[in-house]
Image (cartoon, rainbow, N blue to C red):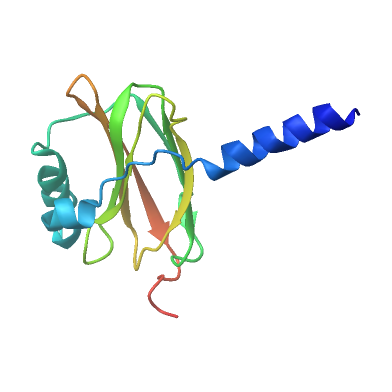
Length: 150
């Protein structure tokens, strides 16, 4: 490789590394604190989105039928819909909200997470469409050993 080409590529890479990316994230714990203290999934969804009217389509949810350890339950979810946010809720722990992800036009809305559940229950994924609808999927699972038992 020629020295000039190498130097121009190196300087270009350094310039890109130095320029900070524009990152914008909402802190939903501060913006909507009642979401994180809600004890039921319905109350948490209402606090987050102002409505409980779920359309049970457009979201794919994969989780085990039986989790041998409630301390690390693998949950995969995705949507092909044009969405603003995707939220995860569960009804096995004292607080229902687990996660809220804000998306943009560059987001690949396919996620893999692990959650903790103290007992058997239902996981609910809600995707807030840019069309105003709440798309959702639910999965009920059994937990053999609770995540809060050690």
